[in-house]
Amino acid sequence: MANRVRPWTDQYVEEWIGNLLRTGVTLAAAVVLFGGSLYLARHGYAAPQYHVFVGEPTDLRTISGIIKEVLAFRGRGLIQLGLLLLIATPVARVAFSVAAFAIQRDRLYVVVTLIVLAILIYSLTGGHA
Amino acid sequence: MNIIEFTLLVWVSSLLAGFVGSLTGLGGGIIITPLLTLALGVDIRYAIGATLVSVIATSSGAAAAYVREGLSNIRIGMFLEIATTLGAVGGALLASRISTGAISIVFGLVLAYSAYASSRPRRERVGDCRPDPLATRLKMNGSYPTPDGLKGYCPHAVPTGFSMMFGAGILSGLLGIGSGAVKVIAMDQAMGLPFKVSTTTSNFMIGVTAAASAGVYLSRGYIDPGLAMPVMLGVVAGSLAGARVLTQAKTRWLRLVFGLVIAILAIEMIYHGLTGRL
Image (cartoon, rainbow over all chains, first blue to last red; front, side, top):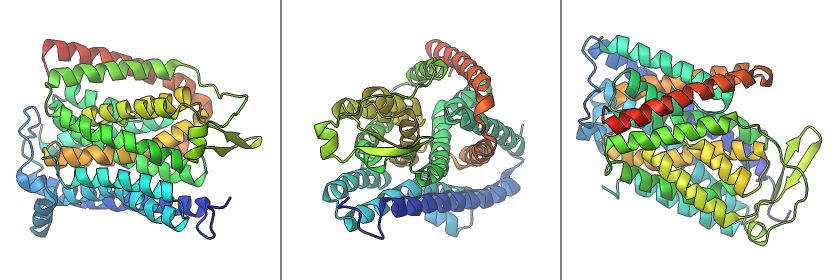
């Protein structure tokens, strides 16, 4: 096949994507576990309140707010950072695919992948709020 | 019940859901939201926020294994992700505009459909493979490993599959699930892809679809760290364990039991949605 320029074969790209996904999930889980331990150690004996929806405070809703919470070393902020890493994993996968298709000179799929990436970035940067 | 006990309870439930979900291939996410809302009285918006995050984790974890085996078709997945991500953002925006009762009813209907879909036998299609002009232009034809060596396939009906994927995306964003069942139908039934290629490509797409609605959920305050933490850690541990003991032999009755549980949860969700008890 003409589009399989070595060493960037589909097989090679797929292995890379596999590693990327695994690393992202592992890292996210580790951060969530660490933040969760802090949170439980500090607030474990309070009563949970999930019956009524009030929504999260602003600092746990935005990327800049979460970074602020993490710098203050708060458990909930650290969990949220782990969840952000998790959400970023498929986004990184898509970004990586743009590069992989570009190296394979597959213009059609560079465009397709860029559209997907644009939708993801739109969602994550809160352009809809 | 204090937060430690609550967290442990949610963790154990999510672990079991992830384990059974991975054994049956139905995903654990679909039963966590009903469990959290019906059994633990969690508001459905917190429940779908926490579940959505766990869906990204299981999809990414499982996809890592499948892409290595060369089963999923990255081009088909990427092309259809345009439809699922657009739908997911729309669905997530819709979730904040309709009542929790309505969300609960739609959730129940999707559960009922998944229970039905899981009870049907899976058959690999055999026969002719005439390349479709549009699919060929989009470089979607491919091959996958079978016990008898590499086998080719040629998808067709791309516009139909694309529209169904948009619907799958809306459901995913609205309910915080992977909507793998709808994705598989679109590829397996509409586009005529082999079942194995459909399920693994669907799994590959779920993470990206869920990430598209996660941004909206986060900014709307649906993702609570205290609740998402045990759900995510439980589902990940459960599905890893499930993938490890996965043996085709015993999953038949397990799928049946799980299908039955889903059917009961479906009725409960619809009932609670109608009576406004959520």
